[in-house]
Length: 377
Image 1: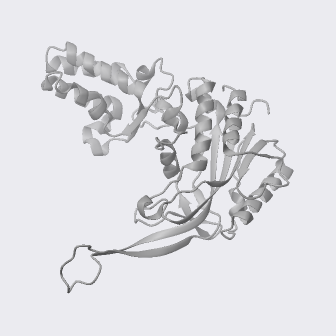
Image 2: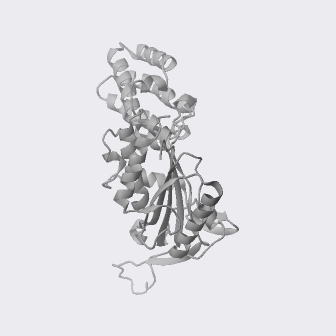
Image 3: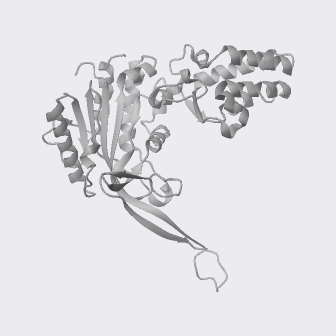
């Protein structure tokens, strides 16, 4: 295909006796779809596990050219101000800290750290801030002069000043998943990786898990019960997942370097297939890999295949695979948009669909190669 603009990634993942993503009450997140309550995994949960998979051989941290990023309310405190402590007079450091907080977090910085936005900054941005703070602390004769210089910086510079010349100003995480900066909308990074909430193709399958903890060293013979009695929720499910990668957007966010964008895409395909979300890991071992992953390359607006599961089906991979295939055939015959496709499937094939079956390594290689053919904008 010439000039593909989008990669669409469809997956089916199966998990048993797990609590993958909890709501504020500690129960599994849910979604009402087609009149049926489904178990859900939020996009935030999925993205966090992909970006935090630092020990995985395909982690994005292993990509050549990777720039780290940090997400916190304490970026200025920990990365900019704390390194100055002990090296410069405390009165000078104390004088400039509020102004640097305001530079990064805007007016909300004055209301305390709990009011600040949990913000993502890339290492190039943090390095620039740290260098400016160190320069002011080093050259100011007293606290008043330091405060004046810091205020001049705050009023004359902005996020664009921080990122000048940086290929990945918001780090590779920002390049993939974007960021929002309420204090400076011009610093926003549009996310080229669009992640849908995964949901079960069938009705939610849940059970309350009653469990106890027994005191191994108890000496009171009158005490025969459990030391702790609790209950949690466990779920089973076959989840449909959907991810879209806007290739021109990704390339632009990577400083127009297709090598980084291609490597990031290859890494992401592996992570989507192999890295599991999950709470209560110690008691449920919620680890699984994609039973099916279908990737489509095309130049038309993406479209989810979630409609295949609007009417609930049973928790059966073969039935779900065939429902997804039927939905794909319906779109093909109606719209004829001509996507090029590759897929992996642990059981069976997508018969009747023009798509080549591969293993995961070959699939990721193919997807990364598509990036090389994509337009820059």
